[in-house]
Length: 189
Image 1 (cartoon, one colour):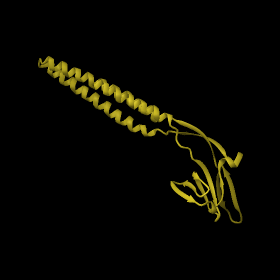
Image 2: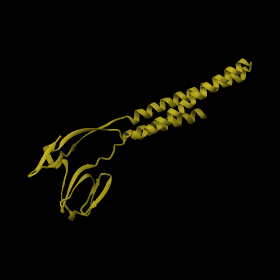
Image 3: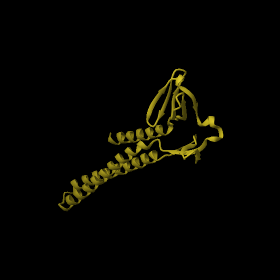
Image 4: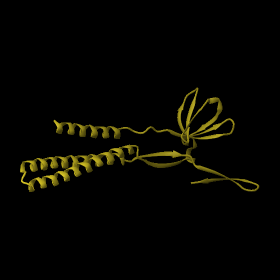
């Protein structure tokens, strides 16, 4: 019964990792919101309706009424003024926890196998051959579980380090430097 349970757990873990790879992370569009009072809010547009505009800016959620907003600028509305960049993200990095857990389990199983081999050798020296054979079988089983856990740890690591590449358009960076008589506007890449 135990081998079936172990095989079922391994199959479920593999199925879960493939299901996670099928998901795509939600994409929020970058925006600059120009308010009527002259403020500019830069962030991601979470939602936009006729009654409410929701923007995430520096881990804060800002809700605005359309009457407060002068205009909303996205990189698509800038045309050639917006740069196109390729971003590599690791959306499944949380699988590193599985890598650590399965790695620890693998280490514990190999340690158990080593201890049982040592005990089997001691029993063989004292001519308790039946007990030594049982301990060697348990050591082999622990070693097999250790290798299985190592394979699952490696698979979890592969899922965690699977990159997701996307291209997106971003706003050019603007910086304001004040001199004595003039205001300089520089466009930096």
